[in-house]
Every structure is written in structure tokens, then in C-alpha cells.
Length: 228
Ligand SMILES: Nc1ncnc2c1ncn2[C@@H]1O[C@H](COP(=O)(O)OP(=O)(O)OP(=O)(O)O)[C@@H](O)[C@H]1O
Image 1 (tube, rainbow, N blue to C red):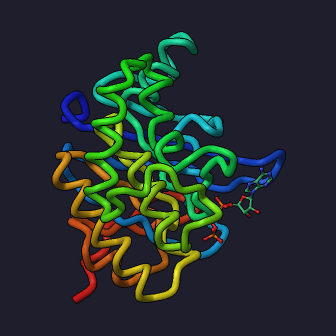
Image 2 (cartoon, helix red, strand yellow):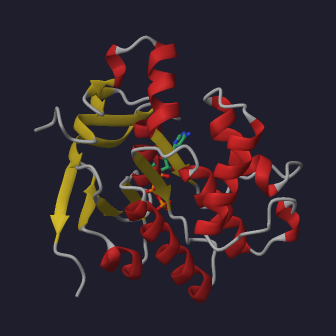
Image 3 (tube, protein in one colour):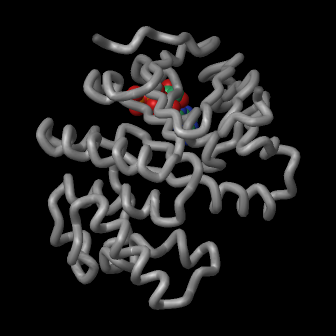
């Protein structure tokens, strides 16, 4: 089963110096599945997401992405697998302020070597329209609201059609109205693209919209019944 899973994490452990964060983490995500990851503040949700994304390194365990054990690949191959198959949405948006909206969204395509301007422009326009920002290509991030910034970040995470979206509290900086809009868009776009999504959240709304809800504990992951 783990061979066909989009993501399979086995026995993952992380510590910072002598301080353990988590250990014995097993989780699996199927293609097209939206999974919400809950957990107390400081339990290691962001650390887990960062390990899966290759932004941080686990101390033990295995991460299998699209059937490939990432740790068994040479770093250039691991990086290429992540670039192709992952999109990341951060709580603080992480857009580049000096680039236009279009250039921010196009970045993953450029990193993948897609430089044919007409094709890049067309895909950027398509994905911006998908998040309700048609015609915003020339804007700068400073000219956008928080909800719009996060929608740009979602467009950037989806532009290269990754198989897995990792989202770390993507509505944590938004007012409730914008948060609900952004969640709707994120989940609609994820499902429309047939991608899987692992979303770290404190939001009941996000958990309610997920296919499955997991709770991260220091020594494992527990399945929770979705909120009614
Ligand atoms: N770079 C780091 N160096 C040392 N300790 C760290 C580092 N990053 C995180 N930690 C610690 O690891 C633990 C887990 O942090 P993490 O941010 O993953 O938790 P979280 O569950 O995402 O928390 P929150 O819900 O508050 O965002 C915390 O105790 C944090 O202080």
C-alpha cells in the first residue's frame, strides 16, 4: 500500500539538540486526499511538514514520496522530486516583495526549467483565475490584502500541478471571512487538480472540510473523527 500512496511516513523522529520533538510518526496520504493535521502548540506540526518538504531534516524514519524513499536518493534527485511533486503554502505567505504577482506565481515553473513565455503566461493566468485573481498579474504583493496574498501563494503552490500540497496554517494570518474564502479556494483547487493536501491547522472549519483528521502527539499520530 505504501508503494502506491502519495506520501508514506514511517517512524519519523525529530529533535532539536537534546530536546525531542516527536518520534514514531507514521502517516499515509492517498492521491487526491485532503488530510488535516491538528495538535497542541509546539508539538511539532510545522517541523513535521518541514521534514516532509525537505526544509528540515528528520533524525530517524523514512519519508516515501510517490513511492520513492527520499532519503535514499542523492540530494539533486531528492530536490528534483520535491520540486516536481510538492507545493507549499506558508502561514506568512512568503511571496517575494520585489516581484510581481505573475513572477511570484511563475517561480516553480521557472525552477522546473519551463521558460517558454507564452506557456508560462497562460498557465499563470489560468491558475490566478482559479483563485479569483484574474488580471492581477502586474500587481506587487504590497498592493494586495492578506486574503489576496494567500490566494497568490496558493496559485504559486499549484502552478506546476504538484501531486502533494503541504499547507502550514494557511489561514492563520487571515480574518475569519478571508480564512473561509481561502480554505474554500485551496480545497477546491486541490481537488480540481487531483492533488493530495496535508494541512496543518488550528481551524475547526479546515478540519471539517478535510477527508480525514489526524492529531499529532509527541509519540505518534492519532486518527480523529472529523468534526460534525
Ligand atoms: N529551529 C529550531 N530550533 C530549535 N527548536 C525548534 C526549532 N524549530 C522549532 N523548535 C521547537 O520545536 C518544537 C516544535 O515546534 P513546531 O513549530 O514544529 O510546533 P507546532 O506544533 O507547529 O507549533 P504551533 O502550533 O505553535 O505553530 C517547539 O518546542 C519549538 O520551540
